[in-house]
Amino acid sequence: MSAVERDGPRPLFKENADWDEVQATLASLGLADGLPQVPPTVRRLEAMLAGVAEPERSLGQLPPMFGDLTPAAGAYVCVLAGCLPAELPVVLTAAEACLDPAFNLLGILTTTGTPAVATVVHGPLARELDMNAGTNCLGPGNRANAAIGRAIALAMRIVGGAVEQTGDMATMGQPGKYGFCFAESDLGLLPSLAERRGLDREASAVTVLGVSGTLEVLPLEGRGSPEALLTPVAAAMTAAGAVAGSGRTRPPGEQVVLLPPEILTSLRDHGCSLTDIQQILFEADRVDIPGVATFGRGHAVAATAADIVPIETGGPGVKMTYLPLWAGGTLTQTRAIRDLS
Image (spheres, one colour):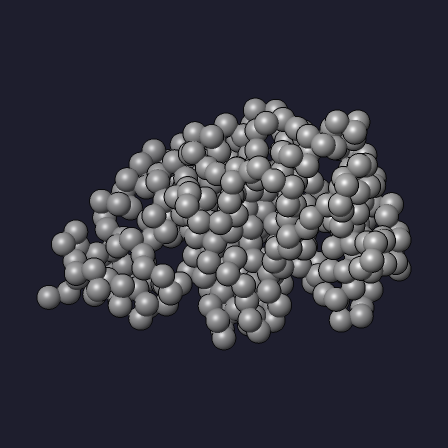
């Protein structure tokens, strides 16, 4: 007897369907990412779509195979990933934001390089969903971070068709392609990125980034000045630009760095504002790490100082995280959370 209740490109299974059979069927249909998935059933899909006014409304076509991004399609991947219904708008808003031409989703999904779609959630909704913006915010342990990130990644595979050897041609890829999602801190040591981009201070929003990986960065010994705190970040930006482009000079775009509260508090104590942070990193055309290396920049690391994007997140400690954006060309996108009612 078949475990499938509703057949089709996004099958739904009977409530009592055998777990192993569900997993095998999803994998055979190309609907899996290699990890166990929540069995999609009529009950779970209807719960995910409760209150959604237009489940089949198209929000655009996801490359590389240009599948139709609809609330119904988003709800299906949300069920698979273990999301709650309140997380569906986050997933859909993030996936839709990726469709902005400047984000270059087609390039990100089909390159032989390593980029993954990373999502930052801003504002009250991040708190309501109990997302992690503290210790280990990029790592495991928080259901909302993990499920939302995985659902966005599954949307790229299942709706967009970014499957290895057909749409996804990454030579190696990276673990972030399973899911990469975290929340921005609301401690207020920096203005929210959503606010910086013209949204209301209390708006719930997402920012999507095409990220080639993560790099841990420590301040210099002593930390007696903003330059000592930020010089290693400037070095990371310079080095990443040098090695990621195969010697080719590309037009400068954006840079993203995650700064934890302890670093931001030190910078604030030195009288350093957001604009100061951006200016220090932008103007560091010669970067000296005493006793280690000296980096000289042949060209600017960003189009302008304002295109250097510090984001407040993380827990105790002074370790920063540099997120190099895909060298093939991508610009981060911020959107207010879509109302699906």
